[in-house]
Picture (cartoon, rainbow, N blue to C red):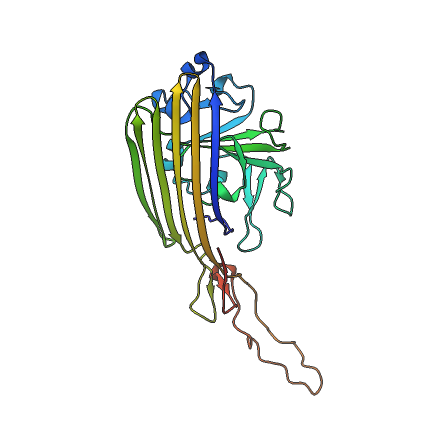
Length: 308
């Protein structure tokens, strides 16, 4: 399992208000609902309106909710396996991997100012760590290639990645639940439920995820400490549609991740000089420990770094 190397605690409230003309609203009610209606046609919002992917004169890669579930894509770095040209380069332990698209990566400062690749959630620009550590209850992911800014609000020279969460269903009660376990000592549980309060007018949706894993599985050579991650997140969405031309969606998300980080080392150990200096006694080979291979996943620190 590939894991993000960043720990943070985030609480986010995003309110999005959209007004569509009646004829546009009749075409599609959103990426997740459109897929349920017709799996052969993929709807995207690359130009800030709902339209068929075949009609968009842009290079867009789409990862649907169905693909996320079937391929067990749990975090942002997993998207690199299905999106050509998208990569997550590792950085120092505990920090966010550098996000790159089309060969252009973020700067050393993390790309917080005018990033090369901008991340959006429900069309609002957000920090990468808000979505890349845990993908859950996502309706669709769209990867837009090429310079962005005119339609997006923030300039990005290489492209943009948009995450659309599942919106509450206005007509019926919906829900899902899943439990996953891996041989990397990871256990993950997630679930969601949507309830229409007033049919076709008001609906709510609650979703959450709990993830426990051994992260990069590095352990200390001199103690029983090891790397691990504990992640909890939940999201609440409210959808209000008093009239056909007004569709209001409000979302609040809470995110907490506590990560124990051990810096991995590798090397041959001290082998000693071939000829000791005159009058000196050379230490024995391996006096400071045995040779360590990268596949051993070992650290020589006693106390790990804990980030929350």
